[in-house]
Length: 324
Image (cartoon, rainbow, N blue to C red; front, side, top):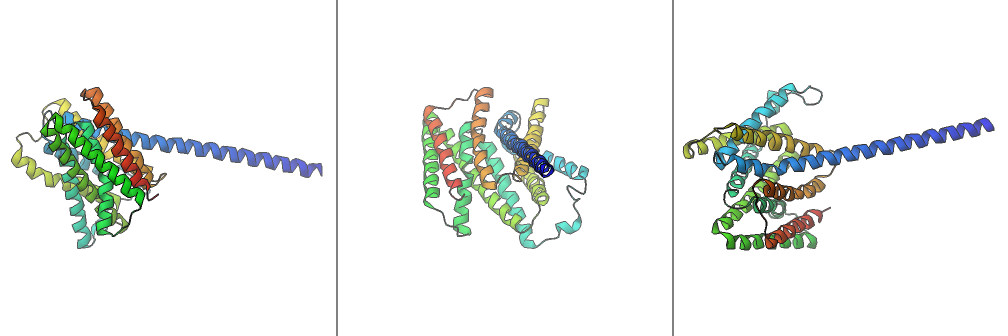
């Protein structure tokens, strides 16, 4: 009897130890996942800063061109050094797909590249904070496209959130109009960039639902995008590449830190968090960007624009979380 009792107590103790160990392991995993997501958001927040610093030497289109071709090389090398177990090597059979998919890949590349170019141009016409927040309207354009094209329905919370975000965008435009008409033009360009970015995400989402691989989409995004921008830069710009070490460091940082590292960590985070939750967390990016712009460029945000930024973030949060 005592033997059975001792055995029971020993078993209970072992179970408790296993349970505690499991809880500790889960806590460590959660902290690690949160850390990865936070690093991804911070890395992506540097994109507007690196872009504006690059534009000291070269144009916005040249900046995007260099960002894309360098990122293409980085991802190509990354594919070559991966083990077959984790990332199977690409083969010719993988690239045999329907003409419809090819057309959609081209559409995704064009919309993504045009969005990046317009966003880079907007930095020369308005503040980094305003441009970054207005581009965060992308989720609303995605939802609008899903409603018009995919016939999705939305609840009252989404409509309220969309209305708040639109009002916030109008307030920023009105406030910037008092500063300069160029600011208003920059705000409009940033909104157009958000719309094109939404079209890109909708197209890529459609392709992913039909088993189009991530590596294929990324290579088309950067490789074909660079080919699209090259003739534009070639015929309109005198300076194709940076001329100083600082200029090269900026475009390399854009390609590595933002295009490859930041986006890669964001994709990794989707293993732990839902896409909706990750989308909501990335709304913190404009805040980090505004902080960086304040430190590096001494850009200030007026009280009106600051309130409008918060209104837009609240609106996007409500719209994004309405389907959760």
